[in-house]
Amino acid sequence: MMRTSTEGPSNIWAIVPVKRLSLAKQRLSPVLSRSERAELVRTMLHDVLTTLCATPDLAGIIVVSGDPMVAKLATLFDARVVGDVMETGVNAAVQQGLRTLEALSAGALILPADVPFATASDLQAVIGELGHYPMVLAPALSDGGTNALAMRQPNLITPSFGDGSFARHQALARDGGVGCGIVRTEGLGRDIDYPNDLARGAGSRKLSLTAALLAEFNMADRLGITEFPVSIRHM
Image (cartoon, rainbow, N blue to C red; front, side, top):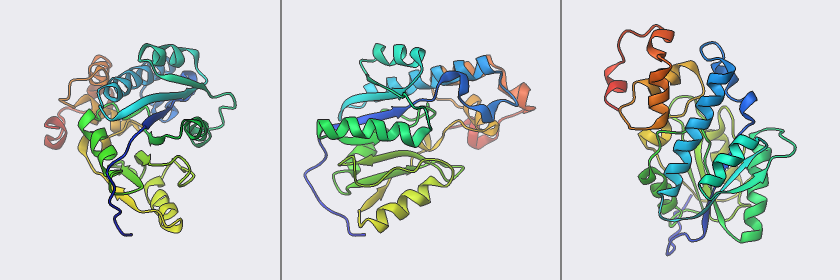
């Protein structure tokens, strides 16, 4: 796909879909209780919203959720809250956010709430690539997922998050004739979805509320880890 040169993106809003806390992160249930999972999601969202607020080229933030506690946290960051009334999954929630952006004539940076180690520089790199491509993807490092999807216009493709979504989003862009850039960074590539991701998070040296919480949860002992691998200890 040919690279398209423009003067750069403008009026880009972040969309963060967040599942109801009582239902979140069930894949972590072998090592975290329901209350611990809810606390983890709240903490990751706090880190993600903090990073979004520190990203200079964003025009605003939309949080899509049906959870009152999530909505309350979002308002502390001056985010616009869109109620997820149907609660039928992440892609339906993302579509609700995108419909809001159509009314604002804005572009989108779709970011999950479980990428707490992403930095403002990571997100700025994704937004910057929108100056060259109509659509930009940031892949997850471990499971073939998508940890960021940015579009100059909110209707370029219909997002399809979930397992294997990075390849799926590339195919959607290709089939639609949409030029697609790719940004790979360590922080943005790391999400927390499976127990092994908790080990990587607990071993992170990046200062974040999430890393502190995982240390408080004593994840190394829970997961039977005596020493973090060098690649984790020095991230």
